[in-house]
Image 1 (cartoon, helix red, strand yellow):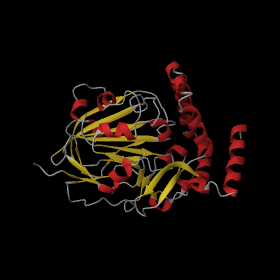
Image 2 (image 1 turned 90 degrees about the horizontal axis):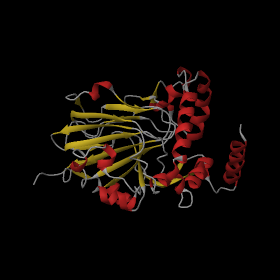
Image 3 (image 1 turned 90 degrees about the vertical axis):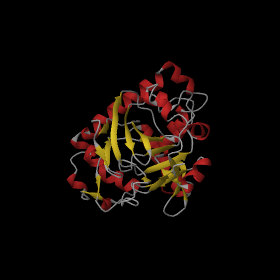
Image 4 (image 1 turned 45 degrees about the vertical axis):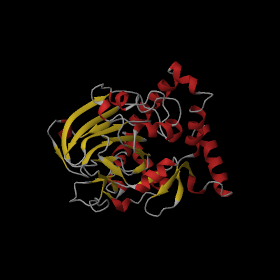
Length: 334
């Protein structure tokens, strides 16, 4: 245990004892969609402190020197290598205990069946763990990942409230001047996954894959502290994306974005082929270890997001959601 880890443990224990930090809930404020309860995301205290030190007006100038990017990129690569070693499986039990993960929702549920932490990280849900909302209704879109989501009726509104990067736009996100403008003024949902989450992601709609692209990049954190800084996180990180043609929703853009400690952003090979059919709720791909983010963008006038998601998002509060929950409905054609 390093000196910083030791100091973190002491601080964490002291705060817990005086009940200032319950269950290490020091992350961003969210709403549990199932209960309506306001809570803070579980997060190691040292990580919270590191983010505050890195992403603030006094130190963001480091980004102009690329020192921050170099540091995070090297850290991500090293941690990714460590999670793929047989010794890493010794972390699984303590990780489950720290984040209170219910292994009965996953298969295999026995942690001894995972050979490395990396295998555990991309664990699959038990088939009955995440029912799909209105599975036979193609006009109902669904949540794509166990995550915290914010949803906005227009990209411009998301920039005002949630994503503060100077250069964030859908065009810069996809690096395509023909594709980007199709979604420039449309509704957008941003899903943020933390290390404790299920890290496979699923299609929000049924349709046909029209386009796939993979883009290399950096591995910044996607914590709200980072996203709401002036550093352009989402348009710099490694990412894969697909465009899905949907009869009910038009063209739908799905962008899987890597982040700190993520070794791979992987869309399944069969969905990398134009013309591939995909069903609402079907598994589209996965992330390897670390936090990560997904942007789902729709064309203007094609979806009405659920009101509870919009209401929380306008107050810069994310909603804690699960794969298959309702996201919104196709807008009525005028």
